[in-house]
Length: 196
Image 1: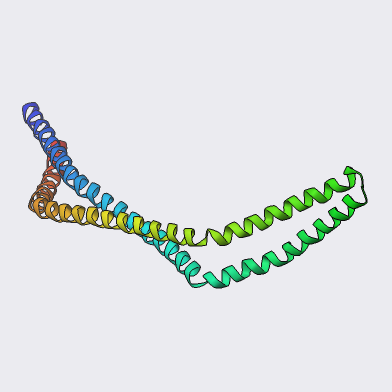
Image 2: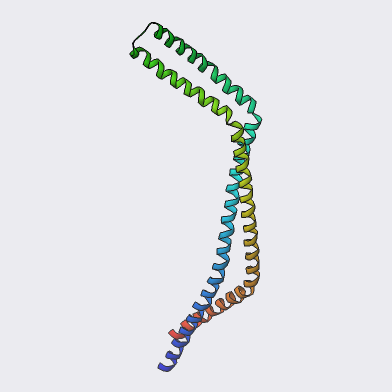
């Protein structure tokens, strides 16, 4: 009886080892497939992000190109009151110069005039750099399109690799799953036999 119990325990241990090996093999194959699937998911999210950034850059370039004249007119309209303010400040400064007013009175006007001139320079720069901005946005779109092409090619390679491995692993996975089920059933029987 003791020997029979010992033989049953050894058989159970052997089955448990086989079961662990089978499950490890299954896990390895599934893990490999999951790793490729995860890379495909990353490539998909990369493509989606590139598409989003490309759409934004294209829309902005198109808006600037389409509204170029209207934007220029808006800038010119913004400049008119600033020019007027500049002229008023210059006139006030001339009057103070003529009246030989102290520097303390002229300093705030000079500071304000400097701010007005900076504002005019900014508006002028905005108008002048618009074609450059459009070119930069178009170039950005080209770079993004190139990146997208690379991501799509990478994704296609990964998809092909996944399909190839799924086909290659399918018989092994099916065999291992059947083996695992059979081993599980044998384990249950062996445990029952051990307690008898």
